[in-house]
Image (cartoon, rainbow, N blue to C red; front, side):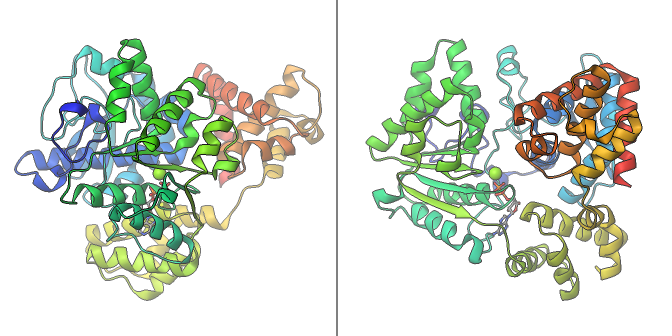
Amino acid sequence: MLLEAQAQQVYDTDSTLDAGSPRDLSGEGRLDSALALQWSRVRARLQDEIGEVEYRNWLRQAALHGLDGDEITVMMPTRFLRDWVNKEYGALLTSLWQSENPAVRRVDIRTRPAGGSTAVPNLAEPSAVPGKSTQPTRRDAEDRSETAAPLDPRFTFDTFVVGKPNEFAYACARRVADGHASPGFNPLFLYGGVGLGKTHLMHAIAWELSQRADEVTVAYMSAEKFMHRFVSALRRQSTIEFKNELRSVDVLMVDDLQFLIGKDGTQEEFFHTFNALVDSGKQIIVSADKSPSDLSGIEDRLRTRLGCGMVADVHATTYELRLAILEAKAARAGVPVPGRVMEFLAQKITANVRELEGALNRLIAHAHLFDRPVTLEAANEVLHDLLRAYDRKITIEEIQKQVADHYNIRISEMSSVRRARNIARPRQVAMYLAKQLTSRSLPEIGRKFGNRDHTTVMHAVAKVTELIAADADFAQDVDLLKRILTV
Ligand code: ADP
Ligand code: MG
């Protein structure tokens, strides 16, 4: 536990991946640990890609079995889940694996034999310490939580490319990591959209601090992990220990704070921890997808305190930054990538750095696999699915029309107030598809459906997800619509 820890760095105390371990690994442990790390990244990206709800519904029980030749085997607990995951997420899982590990060509999804265990631990879970084959205990199983990411050895300041959109956030992070930050930097609040480098910067600070000569204790965790640990401390009636542990660190980092929206008890606990640490001169670093003032659903007093230190925005990338990131990554991979290809990618793949990186990794993997140079033609071919998604943006209007046609109702019913089942259900399906197939937010979708509230859209998404799971005919219907809309 944290109080006993000699290590300079403690994060996610249940599932501590020793800070040095990615480098210390040797012999047989190496493959397992590397694979486990890749698997935890694949899962994190999967969650990002498909959203938390779907991930929880379908994929949280997926377990990595191992890598055999070029084939990754993933285990599901039931045949139903196996078939579903295969059909719905097989392709995505394969491409995520390919971009993580160039050796992978196929992903085989199987059912777990009764009583069987997985060969490779899920890194992000408490029982998983790479290189050690720990037998999960009952309590470990209860405490399982998915999202606490261990520090990623690739997320250092060295590998972070600085440009206009992130230079301020970078400078702040550097300052805090150097240990010379004034109280004005406490807390450091990093915010910005998905995949723009917030987690990278936080890990970089943690690495830097852990390499300093003086002993600094750093605790890094996602807000979700914070909540799970708090809740499990409550259950075990060990909140005092939990509090003491957290309050004994020198630097506390909590990633993706927006997760605490609506979780009042955890927010309260975080607020007290926050105050205790700041009052005793300890550093807090927090990230979120919005600025403190825009984080509605966070209690006012906490929001005020969050905004008291340094608030740094990580902006969307520019073409120049995207190009610089690609150049840096290609150079590190040691694969020659022609300038034209990088320019092409930087121009096309604009959403975020994660996607850009994934595209480059896929290209490199492809080149390795077939022993061919990276060319513009290859980029077009290998990335056609991704590029098509950029070329073609599905609109909510298209979805409404298609769904109305399919269920034989008038398109105006999409915005009407009628609640009869034969109208309301198609409307819910259309909302669900709008959430799935467009990047519109819940409130934006609500507005397009006769100015409905975002909670109505949320309810529709949950309802349709539930029906898809329960009713095969309905699932097929929705799947068909989805396919029609995405060709
Ligand atoms: P966020 O936490 O903001 O969602 P991440 O920090 O997870 O985003 O970044 C997503 C991916 O993009 C990571 O692999 C990260 O290394 C990479 N990345 C983001 N910004 C940069 C940058 N400026 N330079 C290099 N890599 C970056
Ligand atoms: Mg992040």
